[in-house]
Image (cartoon, rainbow, N blue to C red; front, side, top):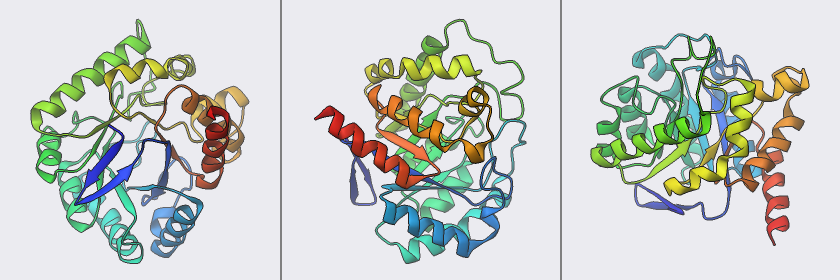
Length: 275
């Protein structure tokens, strides 16, 4: 699947593309408070699109470790104004909604969203898969062990690569049964994994190609970088750039990032490297 379809439009992902992160939330692990400023979000969206982002991912609920889930109504109060203003100013942009609530997905798609990005793969809202199928938009399914509140307490796996791959395979089957035709898979770096688990997944990312789905890699400024380099997220751009190249070399189709310009430079170098 090298082309995504949504609302009569197509997006070519046969060559790697960048998804820019827009946090319409006051409590993200990075860019805290960005979501309280719609004008700031709009400026950030404009910069990301100019820098080459193919997709903008708008989220209104933080899923950092220890975070409690929020209800759809609170989430919609955060994201709908952002979706409306970004869609108005950039009608051709591809927009994604980062949500685990089916109600949020439904209303956001109605307001102009093209893709649903669900960190829970339907586990937090049993109506999510049926909702996305009815909306007829692409769906991003991610692996997470536990919930944001519990996921980093003591993540355990026998074989992290095999278990995450099996989970995503089963999710793809459930999506097919529900009627979702286009699924992107995300191994969920940082979601219920130790540093060792994250690097094992990154080293073996190419094995996920056998699921025959586009692969999204989201390592941007996360703890697998910060803990190794002993830095905070504000100083993790260099590490992010290094691991984005590894992700591309191991099969990633979409890089989900805070820093679009630098990710696009990685893709340009990757393309040159591949000839």
